[in-house]
Image (cartoon, rainbow, N blue to C red):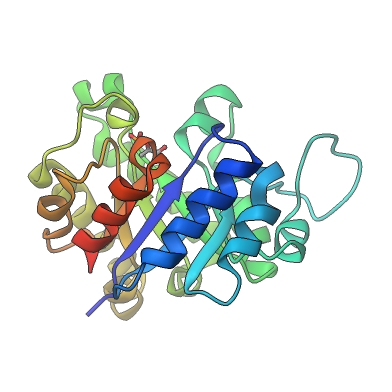
Length: 248
Ligand code: PEP
């Protein structure tokens, strides 16, 4: 039985005061059985880590450099995230792939950096609307997942959370139906199972894309959906906590 996982991606929202208040409200109210992580913007990681210290709520970065250290202005390394108290990090979010042209190879290198520095990587994969309409969903997510399996090895998926986030459902209010999401989750799991069935059975594969309190329970009830990565609804403590409760 896989323990459910729910993450809140705050994207480029908030302030120091909001970060302390939101993280504090989540820590105070959270008493369920799923794993919970929050991903505030870099400048607010300290506030979030302080609010979550000693709690079960993990704090993570929204991105990391694929490099260890050096002349990479504007970048943040895995070691730095670890140093400020992070336990997790997103890699390959579609907004990074789309606006910053991150390639599968870069995403795989980022996941490797995260693993090396003991951060739990959350590997985001997902197809665009054009790709879905062209019948390429399975090929796209297989390519994105395969790049990380090839670079990091199947054993790494004992520590990686995979987030299936169809790009057309992110921030659009258009959610994949539970059946549509389940179909892709099952494909991802069977791809991992071809390399190692035991690891595939324990890897958390979570869904992201307009998850709300009203649709979370039905999505999370699917056999291969092990929780969610939440954007918009992660900015209100009541909504986020209600989604966490739907996961356990
Ligand atoms: C996300 O940013 O990863 C996301 C899923 O956003 P939203 O929930 O707003 O669609």
